[in-house]
Length: 110
Ligand code: 5GP
Ligand code: ZN
Image 1: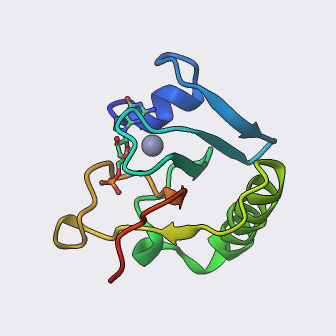
Image 2: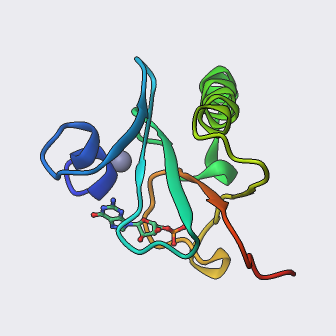
């Protein structure tokens, strides 16, 4: 999508700090970290959010989640929180599906 910030990051039009990349998935650091470690994991293909995943896109979601596990091991995270916000009322600000990996001391409890 031409006006999507994360599609622009995938295209290299906006710089980001890559943590992990393969043919289908990109992970990079957020510009506004809310924890000691705060990584965003996205499919390179534009999908609005988890709630909007279509039947044929489930294999891609599997790749994204497998990447989360890979990244957590790569970064040697002993524990982490995985969040994906859905829709404005769910706190979503960028409408290209992303999974937040949050780790470090003092994560707030729910
Ligand atoms: P949301 O609120 O949609 O779940 O999360 C959006 C995330 O994208 C936030 O962590 C926010 O800081 C991050 N973000 C927004 N714009 C940019 C950007 O241009 N570059 C990077 N690296 N992160 C961004
Ligand atoms: Zn996009």
